[in-house]
Each structure stands twice: as C-alpha cells, then as structure tokens.
Image 1: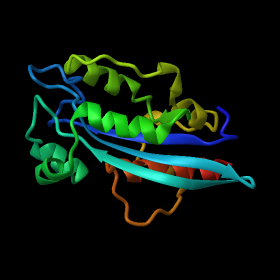
Image 2 (image 1 turned 90 degrees about the vertical axis):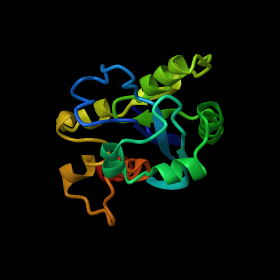
Image 3 (image 1 turned 135 degrees about the vertical axis):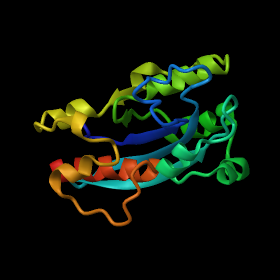
Length: 186
C-alpha cells in the first residue's frame, strides 16, 4: 500500500444485536443495514499526513428501522438521531461517493461487502467501483500487528498512541484511530 497521495479512510456502523456478529447475522430479519459512515480525506504534505476533510453520514435502516439497545449502547447513535438526520441508503451513498471522488478508500476489513449487502437488500443497482475499496489490515500486518486483536477503533492502542475522547464504534473516531496509527508508522 502506497500512501503517497490523497486517500480516504472510512468506517461503517451497521445494525447489530447481542450475538449477531458471532452468528454472522444469520437469524431471520437480522441484516447488516448501514446506519453510519465516517470518512476522512487524507493528504500527504511535506512527508506528513493531514486530514483535509471529514464526513459523517447517518442512514435510516428500512428493515430494522428501530435500532437495538445493543447497537445504541455500542455506538451511541440513537433512533432520534437517525430519524432527524438520517438519509435513505441511495442519498447517503451519493454523499459518500461525492466526498470520495476518485480516491482510493481504505477500511479495516474492507467494508465494501457492507455496501454490496445493502444494495442487494434494498434491490438497488450497485455502481461502485470495487477496485477503489481496500483493506487496511495488510498494511498494519507488515508491522507484525495481529489485526485480529484489534478493531478499527482500537488499532491505535497497539502503539500506546494517545487519542482524546475515545469513542470506539463512532465511525469518525474509528477513522481517527486508523489515521493516527498510519501517521505513527510513517
């Protein structure tokens, strides 16, 4: 992975319930509906990485339109917030894609499959360029980090990096965790 130019770091949050991750969301009506995307536009300038812009988009899930208490406790995103500020899937994705432009997009585990699942779930045509979406974990693994021991929001802890106002599972905080780890390694 070459971070010599501008790129996007993004993170997603999607509907979840107690045990849903372990079950791989396989119970009836248990879907990974997108609830939030956080994204940072990063630019390399004078051998330093800077955040050029940031974006957070909330989505209104269609099938499970009431967020579980488990999800709310995990992310601090509330039903009131998504009802007040949330977008439907197509409109929210349009904002995300406009923000990204033609830049490569990195997430912890390559969340492209979440987008694909939502396009399929809502019976929408997926026009995303899959090649733009990349998994950042192989980059960290080059530094002998066992990425299975961390999440996007906790990877910074491997190097004892200090980040104020920790909010793991807030999509923008999780992006900051990845960003600060990249900066540390460069």
